[in-house]
Every structure is written in structure tokens, then in C-alpha cells.
Length: 608
Image 1 (tube, rainbow, N blue to C red):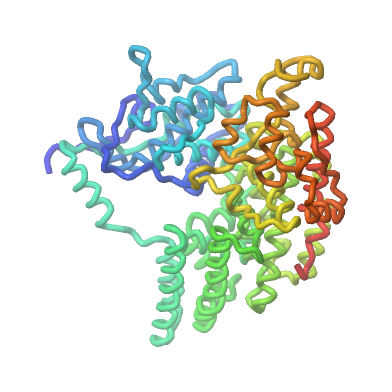
Image 2 (image 1 turned 180 degrees about the horizontal axis):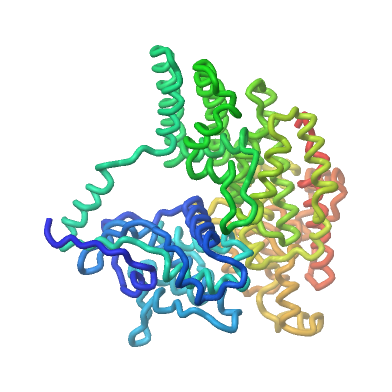
């Protein structure tokens, strides 16, 4: 191989070029987990440098952060690194939107695209992705099309993840400083080869040779080294390998994620408070180097004799790894008996695994474990919904400390103790609840949760009315014609009586987005109905799901199961020939009452 060069390059230099991705390269395939890890890594590293009172000028003296290598050819074809660069491009687009409300801004446009003859060429120049990236840049959203590729769908979804996961505490005076640090201090190593063949050889060499042991492998090595008997050590090694392979079958980094989750759930006592210059505690060290933490805390874990190390793997590791694998399966395959694990996963609440494992004692039998899974996952569901209804952030960094404290409170407690703690927590330890629903509406924050909420409500009233209904179908974005949020009013202030009822277009638009004015419809119908009057829509709704159908008077004819459901929960469903401002407020109250039934804290029972 000739003419292989490498150079450390910051984002402001690297993305000041335009790159292509060859047709045979894999799709953009990052998932929520990778975006979350990227944002956490970047923001945590930023906070290692930032102090209150700093300005953009101080960034010059900040430490750099290595994001990884990028392998490409001399004509700018990316062989390895397009996942990172595409994700960074999405982050830059989001940050560009975020800074528009500020008096000063950092110029990011040239890092996102170049413009010539009125045409935009994005940094990662893949023609099929252009419409998506242009829409995200211009509007901050993208309406997926039926023939969109996997890459385009993933780009759209990951942008929504960035909106949801970017910390609220970074949106103040720190924002411009963070942007400056991101583009000037985050470093990638740019490896350039003379040809694609040479670039691929570099890629293979970097990935096949000299691989370092992972923290999981180092933890295993340490634990096995403390077991004296050879036969026992071999048996424990076989057990460990079986579990690790099972976890990797579930997810690429399933073994690493489990080890961190397990140790944090069962043993971590301290978390770092504050950021810059504060000492890392149990929680952070376990995340960085679990093998090191176990070795340094062996006495706290009761690891003294050879038998202790044997039991630590054969009993504790084995039990919690099995449960973790089961939870991951419940999170991806809907199981009615453990439905709340699925619901929490649908909201991308990854901390639920830590909380559930914390509640489980090594001595718990199968029945107790299953009850604890149901109880903790139901509490998480209720806690999340109360935060969402109150417009409180669910960003990972914002809720992490609260979750850690709950984790310690329920650790290895009995079912009755956990149930009592949860009921008391909802009643006395949070100052927000379902009463907030009077003002709940669709906006950029609630958009990521609204589909889930409407799906829960729709599936609930249908199931309770004897209809075979599936929450999974309502939230499945991969099906050919997924469900979308439908506004009962068209986005037309001039239509109907809106000008009479509302003093301004702005007031109309805010009411139009209220919770009670929304239902779910298949995507194709949502689009074909969007300009119709309410009267026209309500006739169409009769052939749709029960929540939408309940607006039509024919829904109440010869429908005893639905009427029985209404009576059982004392819900004031009614049809509307027209849909006025007062009707919307009445429907908002109905949705509030349905929510109180679904998310009733009395359901947090030890015998659930």
C-alpha cells in the first residue's frame, strides 16, 4: 500500500469538505442507543472543561476530545466513519436550529452544506438523503415517504432522538460555548488512502489486529483468577461465555450494557454531583471501568475467598444476566403480562433495566421476580407519564440522579415495601400529576410521546370494549402505512367558525394542538383528510379506530360493549356533529378522565 497518510482533524476542518458514500457501503444504521451515547459522551466531556462564567474565547484553552478515526480515499469517498459523520451532521443541524433564538450565533451552515447555483450539497453527499436533510435543515422535521430507504428513515428518527435527548441545561448561555467546543476541539483522525482498495485494507487491519480486551473480558479474567480449583474455574468460564454470547445475540454490546446495569443496580452507592473537577464515584467508574471498580471494591461485594468469587458468577451474575435478557425480550416483543416493560422501551427509557434489577434480591423466587418486574415497570410508566403531562423533560441527564436515588431506595426490598414506597412517591414526592392534563397539548417536546399516549388510549378503550386491539400496531413505524397523529381541525383559520371563536390565528393554532383535538389515523388517511372540514372528517372516522369513531353518532348505535365500557369507568363519550372550541375543551376533559383510569396510582399493588 502506498501513500497512506493520517492527520488529526477537528470537525470545523473535516466537515468543510464534501464526502460521498459508495453505493455498496452499508446504510446509515445508528439507533437511539448510539445517539444517546454520543450526546452523553460529548456533553460529559464538555462539562469537564466548562466553568460558569466562561465565554467562547475560553474554548481555546479547553481539552480536546477524540471521537475516532475516519478512513477515506483521496477523492473523498468514506470507507469507514460515515455513521459518526452523518450523526454529527444531524447534531449540527439541530444545534443550528437551537441557536436561532440567540442574539449571536456560530456559523454552522458551511459545515452542514455548501451552496452553488441555488443548490445545496450536504457534507455527506448521498443523493437519496438530500430531501430529508434539506427538510431537517429548513424545518427541523421530515415527513417520511413510502419509498424512503432505511438510511433516510433512520436519519429522520435519529434527528428526533437528538431533539429528545439533548440536555435542557445545555440550552442556556452554555450553548454557543458548547458549539464552539464541538467544532473546534472534537478531533477525528483522518486516514487517507490512494485508492479504495488500500482504504479497505487499512480498515481490515484496524479492525482485525491488535484488539484490546474489553472491560467485560477483563472483569471475567479477574474473577476467574481468584477461583483456585481448576475444574470449578472451567465451569464458571463456560457459564460466563454462554451468558455473554446470549447477551450479544440480543444486542451488539449487550454484555457490556448488562455488566454496567447490574453493578449499578445492585451495588453502586454514590454518584458524582456536579461536573467539572468533581471526583468520579461508583456510578461513573462502573460506566468507565467495571473491572477496575469490582477489583477495588471486592470487600464491599463480599469477595474474600475463592468460593465468594465462584458464587458471584454462578449465582449473582447468572441470575441477573438471565433476568436482563428476559427484560430485553419483553422490551422488543410485546407480552401482555409484562406490557409496561414494552411501553417504557417504546419511550426509549433505558434506565428501566437498572431500576427493575435493583428491586430483585438474589434469593427471590420466580413468582416474586415476575411481580417485581410488573410493579417496577408500572411505576416507571406512571412516573414518566406524569412528567410528560407536566412538560418536564425526560432527558437522560435530567432524570439520572432521581433514578439513581430511587434505585437505591428499592434495592432488594420486599414487594410490599416497594409498593408502599411507590405510592408514597407519587402522592408526596412529586409536585405534578394528571391534573396537568387541562393544558396538555402537542408541541415539539410532547410530539415524541403523543403517538404513544394516543396509542395507549386507543388500545385501552378498544380492548375494554371487546375489540381485538394492538398497541404495537399503533406505534409501529416500520409497517407500510403507519399511524400518524390526526388533528380534528384542518390547519385553516378561515374554515368553519374559527374566526368567530378565536381572536387570532395564533390562538386557533394553540387550541388546534390541544390533546382533546387529536386522534390516530393511518398515514395515508391522515394526509388525504387533512384539508377537510370536521363535518367531512367525522363521517370518515366511522370506519377507523374506536377513539376516532366515537366522534361519529353512528358509533353509539347497536354497540353494547362500548356503552358498558363507558358506564364501567363513568366516561362521558359523546358524538359531535360540529366541533367547536367548547367541544374541544369538553373532549380534553374526556381524555383526562381516560388517562386517570389508565394511569391510576392505585394499580401500584404488590400483588399486581
